[in-house]
Length: 386
Image (tube, rainbow, N blue to C red; front, top):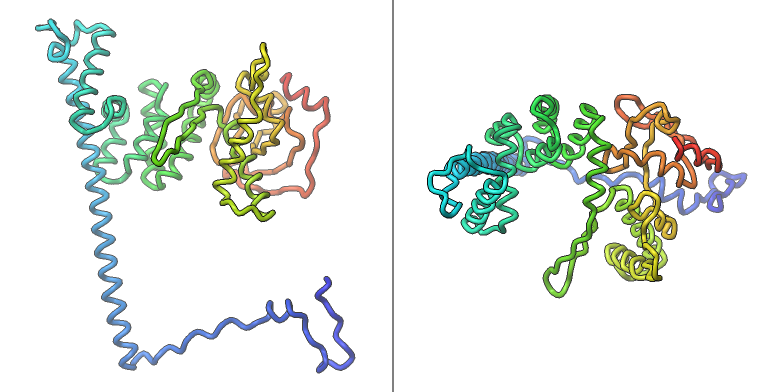
């Protein structure tokens, strides 16, 4: 309001504010267009048409090549699966002193030996690691045996290998009938969406079809949490943390907020550098080493009790009936998807709530109040006990 000035009695003497002048500048005048029948206009049209035609031809070539790559990948997967079947039918090729051994004679241990030996041969031939070759064999088996329509779509160039990988990941743990129903529902989406879009949509499709499996899979996945470290070029390294998504995402959000605040205050580092340094500082300072302590272990067993010190922020959409204990519909973590068994725990730890009315089918926001609502102690306690 400081820039506003009342006009004087004489309208001709009123001088608008500087901001007013900037906001009311007329749009820039485009350069004059030559008449349609002028020689210059005709030359430009001919030149532009030639360039557009050449670009379209090159784009068609890129699309054709991409479809050929997808078809070649499908052929490679089918060939890999055929090798696996041949190896299992003739295990004596890989098992010493096992001449005449057939597939029916294989035990679990001997079949594992055949698969491991085949992976080593494939890896050496393709110039990849044994574990990567084993993954290729497993993917080929999954697509050929349980997701044949997805493999056909890959062969036709309708989907990419990334689409097929997402289908494989989400079909794990389903029986044959469930996989068939899942593929029938998810494959049309894969054909219509980019790999990134589909990787998010396919999670929701799986959970909508089989909501009862998400809690058990979440429990199993939490037991496999781990930290990995490996070196990269130029004296650098990567520390990878595999943990529940709400924990990992909250740590990233905390680092991002710290980085943006420091950058706005004049820090000359890049945002990515500040994020990295903030996480390193939190790790170096946050560990406890007192005898008898179990650093980072809280009620959930995955370090939730340590999160309060760095004030992470996550956006979770929790159905109100789930909070009330009348439904087991999972919460949805922003940027990820359904996350089971965390809705009430996060609600108990949340310093405030934002009541958000969303569309039942589309999920879009219909109403959002301006004020936050802070839950009382009794409310957070009830959320945990439910």
